[in-house]
Image (cartoon, rainbow over all chains, first blue to last red):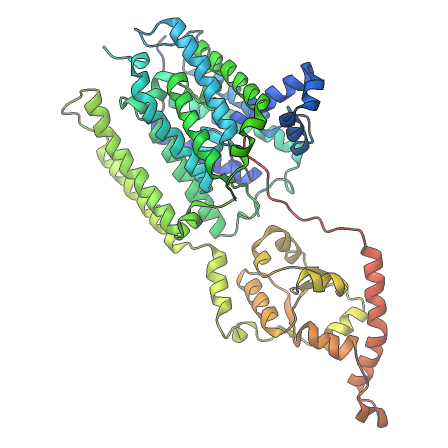
Amino acid sequence: MNKTPYMNPYLAGFFLGLTLLATIYITGRGLGASGAVKSTVVAAVQTTMPEHAQNTHFYKEYSAEHPEPPLKNWLVFEVIGVIIGAFISGLISNRLKFTLEHAPKTKAKVRIAGAIIGGFLFSFGAQLGRGCTSGAALSGMAVLSTGGIITMMAIFGGAYAFAWFFRKIWRWEE
Amino acid sequence: MAPLVPDLIGNELNYVIAIFIGIAFGFILEQAGFSTSKKLVGLFYGYDFTVLRVFFTAGVVAMLGVIILGHFGMLDLSLIYINPTFLWSAIVGGLIMGLGFIIGGFCPGTSVCAAAIGKIDAMLFILGSLLGVYVFAEGYPIWEGLYKGANWGGVRMFETLGVSQALFAFALTTVAVGAFWAVRFVENKVNKITGYKVSNQKVYLGLSAFALLFGLATFALPEKREAVMKNADKADVSAGIAGMEMTADELAYRLLDQDARVFIYDLRTKKEFDYLSLPNSTNISVQSLFEKDTRKQLLVKNRINVFMADDDVLAGKAVYVAKELGYTGLRYLTGGFNGFNRNILQYKTPALAATGVLTDSLRFRQTASAQLPELIREYKAKHAGSAKKASKRVLGGC
């Protein structure tokens, strides 16, 4: 079976914009993703190392700001939805497949290392920047938050600035 | 008036809604092609600008939507979450995210999408993300200073730049539309496509014009607040509020009569209000007339909404704004609280009248001055400790 082509980007953007607008209208907050990662880590640490969590500044501060259990978090539920939604989309468009995707000339272990390091850096940066591409950049732009727009420019500006150094791992053409 | 959470939609139901919103979010991201790093990274090497098209379109649509809903008073902008600005952590965090993006080929949201359709590289990216948070948490004291430094609060970009919201929104829309056209040339150049004819050129031209028109329309949609406040600040609003006066005697009479319809909006300072306030009153500011809590009070049916300030001017302004916003049953206290205090609460029988026969009005004031303070005390005792439940700004963010 052939993969279905992707949706027209402007149409997808329009729908994404409406989803974000509906989110703000209903809940008063925007979309996000990295917050769910944070909740997961806090929950894991609190469960496996309860004493450590009670004595460490970060987890104490988190618990003070979030009286509810860490997994009872809006973004955790939202990300569960993202998994479902993306799966449905992959299913109807014939894109479900276990694969380690990398450029033809990039070795698999380079891609593996890159994915882990990249995830590490992105999520570390998202803690510092109080949100990622969804929570800070996109949702921040919708409400014209100064911090969100600055973070957005820093993410994309940073990626462009560093792109040259990593060009060899992303050679798909030829 | 939105946001619908937590009044119309409870906090628990909100979690169910989160799942449905997530489904839409994930579905759209996957359909747009955000589940492959090939497409995402294309943005940074110029061979595929899908990310820019989707992202900018979504941002502009949502931004214009928020402005329009705010203008028509359908969304209380004072309650929605505005990502706070911490200058240095926003810049440093953003740059680190950019580095992570170009090395890992995903961002958190897209990695979840890609993992959901079986991309192993995305699952590894998520593994790295979990480690990233863990290290951030463990080393938190080291970067806490950077994290919390230069706190500008929930400022908005147009305020920071000192321009109007409309101008900034229009500029952003223009930049987005300009970028949509520009990236096609870059894309074709990088992909070595020559003589490429755009299909549906007319449709895209039309859409661009439509987007720009919408951006331009924001100039015609100043926040309702600004427009109404400007009119209210004009010297003469009296024509607009004629017939809405309520004298101190009438108010005193209604209070003594325990008229349950009377609800007083007290515009004095909180300190004055806490020191001495009338029964059935709430302390507000003119600004709060645009907000959800005051709106809820004003929408209660069959009420006599009495605005009261120290004097007539502020009360008149408030009643004018309320009328412009379409509320009914509006009155304002003439002579202000000062007059009410002088003529009713602190009523002293004039020396002249003491000798002769009291007029009806003076006799009433004498009675009122004896009974009202007692009523105020009773009301205060009954409602002491029942703190007002105010809507709070939604807490969001990652």
